[in-house]
Image 1: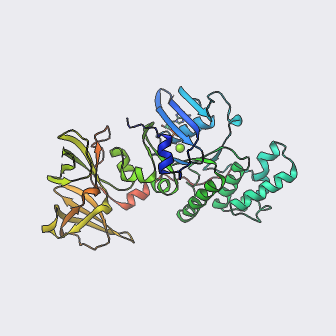
Image 2 (image 1 turned 90 degrees about the vertical axis):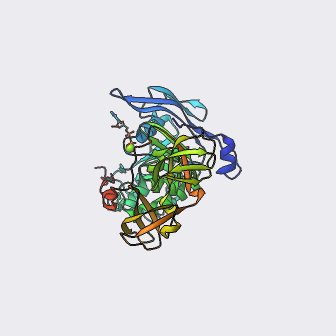
Image 3 (image 1 turned 135 degrees about the horizontal axis):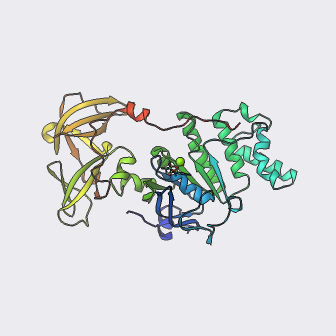
Length: 394
Ligand SMILES: Nc1ncnc2c1ncn2[C@@H]1O[C@H](COP(=O)(O)OP(=O)(O)O)[C@@H](O)[C@H]1O
Ligand SMILES: [Mg+2]
């Protein structure tokens, strides 16, 4: 499987502006089963100081279980959890320098905002004056200045989530675990909170390990994305890596829209698919090696039929605001193309694809699982979004 580690040198050059980063959490060969079902299958992952790392994957792929193992709420059947160089497999959650924010806020309804945030420090018998200073610092960070005496039950969902974040951060954990914390918020608020969480992470320098099934959220917020499927890590990389250089058909399909085609690598820099030979920028494959080819919908140009490298008929056009989503039937395979040029349904068009718009992937267990866009519908996409309603702690 495509598991990979990142060398510190890579981090130094690519993401962290020249500073060499320290490993905070290391998962080593972690496996976990429930009722004989493998839920995590040999997970290896290094998480660095100051990093905003996102576990991304469909429901059931093992994200929450991974987070719970880091938090100490679940024990791995095999493997080690290392925290700042120390093996902590047997350390209970409250002894770990880690805190968690859940989608369900678990607020104390009988306490006001101040007392909800102060709670972890009161438990530790921190002096009153220090508590006051710290709570105000936190309130300011989550932009709830002046909310001290408000009842938490009178706050909006977004405000309650900020209180939960302030409470989780007040004890200055080294690592904050966030399990789909924005899942219950409506789209606009969710986008605002994404920006704010990112700012808070940068301001505090605390390592955030964030879980989401929403690829757009992962792309906008993360330094590093870990794509998971069926209990295995499929790819680790920056948002740009994951989007531009997906490791296999699963990642290509899960992140963004993709046309995924069967192809054959004829030789370096030359690939054949859809009955046509294309120049590409990939090399290092065996001659005649079967491959998966991915072409992003925004990287295809629509041209006159006679100028096209591929030719076909437009079967549907959907206006998306900024662009049109056009489905084109090319010899029976339905491509998706995003374009700002209008074409009409039934029109015969040509497609032009630059070499660097073609990305070649090794065949994998996911090859052939993703078809074309013949059953494409935006409405279906929305209906199948497994967002949950928020429920407050009573
Ligand atoms: N305590 C448990 N007992 C039995 N099965 C569990 C338990 N926790 C998780 N699972 C199963 O493990 C799989 C992975 O779950 P989870 O880590 O919650 O996935 P995700 O957070 O990615 O949706 C799912 O099939 C889930 O049903
Ligand atoms: Mg989960």
